[in-house]
Structure formats: structure tokens, C-alpha cells
Length: 478
Ligand code: GDP
Image (cartoon, rainbow, N blue to C red):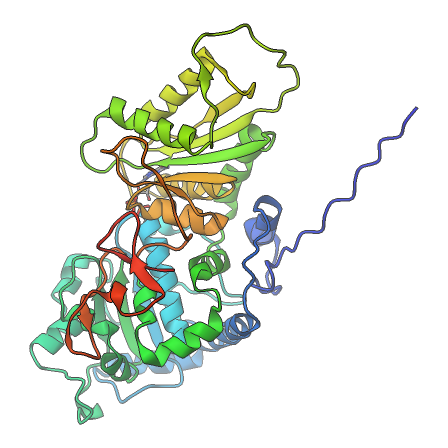
């Protein structure tokens, strides 16, 4: 008789190439160190310099964390109603806007911005995000204690659009200028940076170097964004050199920072691991399909378009419409397709196709969809938990098909380190495009060349910038 010897398990690097600090309690956040068991190991290694900067950021954060002495000092200054220049601890407060994908890409941008400025990132956590993520920095918190915070109504987008310290408005009204003669005595206690898609050209002056020099004087910057604004930071000379040191591989920024920052809470990790083990773990290959419908589309045409994309890209096998006699299928491992969508129509269409017909390759295809919430409900925690779980499950695929213009898909591809096949042109048959990178797109970038002081297409200002494949007005890193 033979003795079954379990092959030794390959050792997994649970710290993701040094990206994750070892100083966390494992049980309080199982996903943090278990993710490495589920993700394919990344060939995008973080640079030693990034690791060094993350570790020093972590100590700075701990030193300046809410309710420390230094934090209280900075809060006191905020109460005093004017800034006297930078303090020992200076902050970027991130405020949410829109769905989870938008939040995650903008939060990542805000973190990088804080890192570049030696500021501390605090998060004004909405109720509907409480319990989604673990703390990203060891022995401290990134949650802004909003109860004692001197500035109220942080949640109200509307109130802040009219905030007297909205940076763009202050420039427009000439209350503030990047003129170096601006004396510290006249600086307000904080600035509100309105960086959501619908801001104006004055708000967008944020992306210019002179403005960045002025912003350094403020210990408190409140920042609301739903954009991945990292590409524009490369055009600010002050940051460019540092960014190149941090990220020798420009197109892995979101991949690395996303994996560094976002760790599903234990409850969300339960959703992910239960679903994965039940439906996906046993498959020989996994294809993720993220279907996000924006505007009116003809279902039948759109479903054919998506299926054609999968077939023509050889991500799924054709079906044999002649219904030949079944081949011997015992012990054939299935290929799994994970569909995520707010509706179930596309999933049903694909499942039926492989139920009713054999494949030409002899493969069997399992089609799964964890939820169909019908409508976006970003204000509900439970809805966001499913969204996060599904983003994560998509990232565990071997290949991805994603919808154009969707930040939900961007996060999945970044987590997974995958270049997706993009459903770019639902009007044209068979056109889906294999994305050149896994980086998210900055949908609504500024259109101003700060150096030349005139309107410009930012995609033309640096060789490593270009228009997004799925949204030509946007820019991304290549
Ligand atoms: P975007 O609007 O596609 O850029 O992505 P966002 O994540 O910012 O906003 C869409 C929101 O709709 C998500 O956060 C979810 O709340 C919901 N949603 C959209 N597609 C899906 C899906 O496939 N599954 C789940 N569970 N929720 C989805």
C-alpha cells in the first residue's frame, strides 16, 4: 500500500513583501495576514524605500494619533481660529463621497498625499463604513473622533461646498493667494479641499506646486474626494522625485497601497472566505466578471456583448449548439465564473448558456453570483459589506472582465494585481480591451498646465501619463 504524504505547503509571505507591519494582533483582523493565502503572490514588490517610509509614517501616526498630547495641541490651534504655520503634528482629514469604490481610491490618494507631506491621515468615518475595515496602522487609530472635533457637519457635502474656508473659493475671492508675501497672521485655522468630480478650476489649483507650498502652512487640511488623484501628483515637481523613489514601478501604486491600507473586518472576511471556499476554491480557474450598468442599456444586446468579450478573449469556452452526446465528465474540475452585479439577469443568461449546452472544450463551467442588491445603497453598512466582499472575491480571480468607468472594478483589479479586460464600448460588437495597466483612472483631472499657466491636456505633459482606455477624458499612469 502507498502512504499519502501531504506535499509541503509553500510558505506564504503573510507580510506581503514587508508591506504589512508585523506589529498587529492577528486575531483582531484575520484578513490582514491571511490574505496572502488567497491572493496569488504579487510580482510587484514594494521598494525598500517605500517600506522605510511606511514604517516611519506608522510611528508618526502613532505619535500624533487622536487624543495624544500633540493631537490636542493641534486641536487647540484649530479652535483658536487661525494657523500660525505647521505644527509638530499636521493632518489631512479625509471625508467620504459616493460609493465604496470611489471612497477607496480617493482614500488611497489622500493617504499618499499625507505621506508625501509628512502629514497624518485621519478618516471621518461615516456610519455606513463602521465595521468594514480594520485599522491600517499598528497600535493606533485612523478614525477622527468627530464628537470632540471643533468643525461640525463634516458629513454634509452641501454645507462644505459653501464653507468659508473652501480653498478654491478663497482663491477666487482673493482672500488667499499663493503670493509668497501672504503673512502667516492672516491664515485661517484650516482649509477645505473640494476635490470631488464636480469641483471648479479654482479648487483644482490644488494640483499646482505654488499652491502646495501654501498648503504646507496649514496643520489642518480637510479633503473631500471621490477621485483617484495620484496621477496628478506626479506633475507637482516637489513630489515627483519622491514618488519615483517610492514607486520605481509607477503602475503598481494602487496595488501596493490598496493592499497596505484595506483589510476587511472579521465579519466581512467571513463573507469572503465562506463564499470562496463554498463556490470558488475547488475550481481549476476563476474568471471574475464585474457588470456595472450606467444609464440605459438594451439587456439582450449588452449580455451578448459581454459574453462575446469572454469568448473572443478566450476567457471562456464556446458552447456546442449541436448538443452532441456528453463526453465523460466524471472528476472534471469546473472553471468558475464569479459574476458581480446589482442585477441577476447577466448571471442567469451565462449560467443558462452553460447549463443548456456543452462546451466545445469539454470544460464544465460553474457560474456564481453572491448577491443582487438591485440598487445602490451606500448609506447601508450591510450593503457596503457585500460590496467589499465582492470586490475582494473578484480580486481572487485569475482573469477579470470589468465595466468601463467603474471604480468598483478598479479596486478589484488593483487588489488582485490584474490587468482587466475592459468592457469599453457596449455599442460595438466584440470590443473589449485588455487594459495595459492595473492602475485606476483619474476620471476628472484638472486641465491646467501650472508651469505654462494655460489650459492643457495633462495626458500630454509627461511621457508616463495617458488617457484612460475606458474614459478618454480621464488620465492614468502608464
Ligand atoms: P462605481 O460607481 O462603479 O464607480 O463604484 P462605487 O463602488 O463607487 O459605487 C457603486 C456602489 O454600488 C458599490 O459600492 C455598491 O454599493 C453598489 N454596487 C455596484 N455594483 C455592485 C456589485 O456588483 N455588487 C454589490 N454587492 N454592490 C454593487
